[in-house]
Image 1 (cartoon, one colour):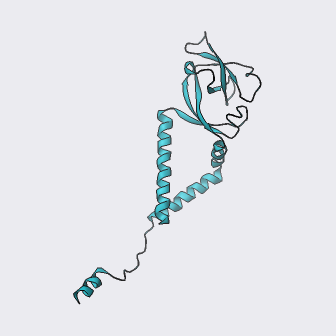
Image 2 (spheres, one colour):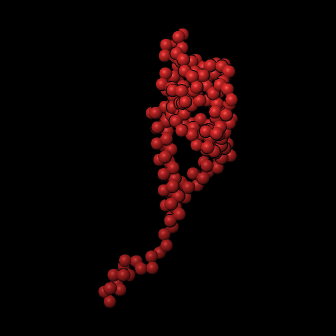
Image 3 (cartoon, helix red, strand yellow):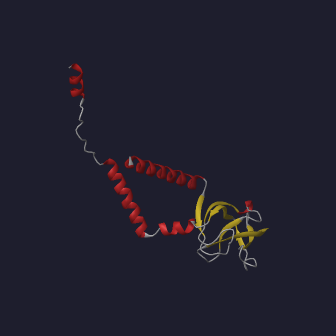
Length: 174
């Protein structure tokens, strides 16, 4: 019973993983982990958000967007408070962003042609995702899956049937 339950659980988690991977590629989705509290209380530090890359012209004031800053490797994710057309770049806009926890908008504007729009977020999930990337967690999960697969396909020793069909038929004849 436990074998079937664990195998069913692993199959469900595997199917969810496959669907998530297909959705991320076909819908251009990604997960973003918030490391600071600049978007609190709506998106606290440690939250994870699902984002989708869109043309910058589709953003609206009030959207939460993730954009790259010139010369900085990490993106900034704040709420859009103003949008202006960028006259120097076809399809480009200049975004003014502000963290919900910040009293003023960011001191710089962001000229972009595309951005990652936050579709939804979940508090605390980001912390768990970051912890799952630790080497000891990955090794443990690999060992767990290996043991589960081995246990599932290991030959089962059958015990002798106390009433084999030959004896049942013999008893019926008497």
